[in-house]
Image (tube, rainbow, N blue to C red; front, side):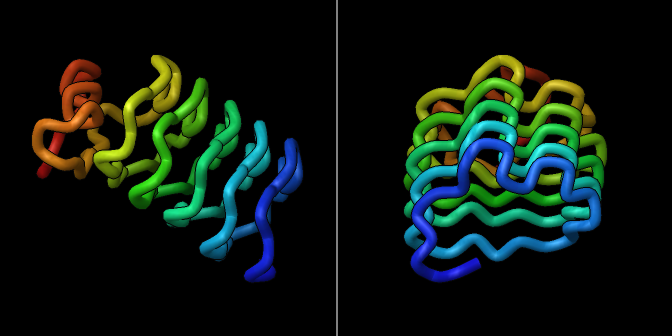
Length: 135
């Protein structure tokens, strides 16, 4: 993706089932609703520090997704953002996260390990929802 990319629109890569890799550039500010829904070969994801908005269901049913790293900056994880990511093993959340929707990680394995900052909102949310936490 071009380094000048600021926004990925709604449904932009929805159902791109063969997409196995994406390099999201620093400078990207918005990922729209269901932008990467059912990208079934995508295995790893790193969201840039410049990301300000993640749309509902942005990565829903990315069934091969194993690792998610969200860098400092994003403040909210919306409804169904990672719903149905059945291979998910680890999620790294920054201390900037202040809101995680109830369904953000629904239908993900209960064995997902969340790496968070001690005392953060993300730590509290992950523990309340029965996930393992490392700090």
